Length: 466
Image (cartoon, rainbow, N blue to C red; front, side):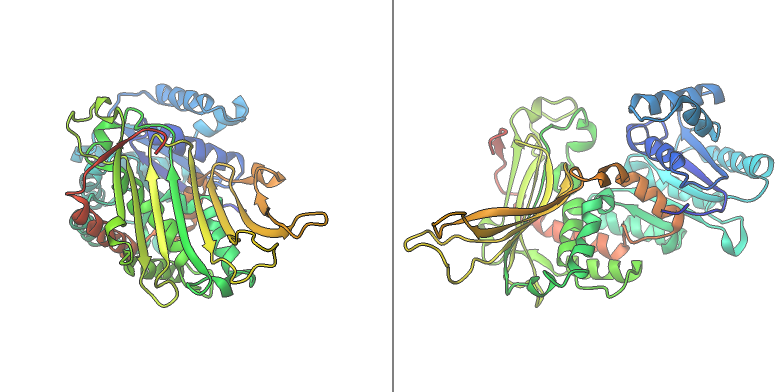
């Protein structure tokens, strides 16, 4: 990988002392710095309501990086945090954005000695998006100061709205205040290595693409399971639920990667267009209407902190969908996600149809089926189950697995964290791994169909043995 840009760049993180920033963004930035993938002239400006002196903020950064267990030397961490500065205020406070503008202008003039690009990362709850967008635009912070070559960009975390109406309102506000090329809507699952490998695997190998349709594929399953519960996130999670939290974004984006048509070239606009076409063609499976969805809540959820005692929020769902186009019509897509599951995993399994005949012993059960698995996490990799004759005199068949695992190769050490890739691509201006307006709206239209149909569906209680 090459340095994302040689142009001076300033990162502004709203909510810099929050969990997302501490757990993902700051570690990702220091990793990029250690790999020499940040501009030589970069600055980090943290914004939060807490009162920090410059020294206290840098101490906070140092302790955050060390707490993550990163193997960076003390000197390297110190050199990284020398680029950091702090601004105090609340997200709704108009004058705070004047202070941010003054801080950025001062850094450009006194330290960088030229105009720097600006990257604004909203590591905040979605409730604050509107105020931050409005103040960024009205304060002039989104206007590049470097002429035709300069830029300002906004990174927004999911969820993008809580339903179709709020998503459309958010997108309307964004399009009014910013150009589309300035907006980077983050779904970090798209930045995971195996997810990115789906397209390379499909379109760079003739082995599977001719089979990639309803002619040869029986069904596709996408699972996103977590062993843990809501982990103290009751304020956010209750009333949101699994479908909004991971279904509308992570799972549907993985589905789009598997189902999309060949974009013909590595072009962000073409790839995003093909993903959006898939999402726009989604519907609940007509062949299994009565069993097209299930929703559940794990035992003990209502006893969690900040969760209503009569909460109807789902922590589990299972949906059977269909991609209504010529390639996929009739193929069920089983989408499942849940907390307090037997194991933590995110994977896609493509089940090919069984063979019509069997070269196996008389009377043997004919159940031979190839299964292709994309393991997104943990133990990222790709595997396929195939059938071969058992060694010896018998003609009995047995399953074998052909696999590629990052963990079993030297490549694991080279895997960037998803947030490293998100930040790196944003600096480069590559929107391939970021959702477009069309994708967001198409995903919400499908999700709203489910929510409308299951609002009267009984909520089952489950434990880890679901």
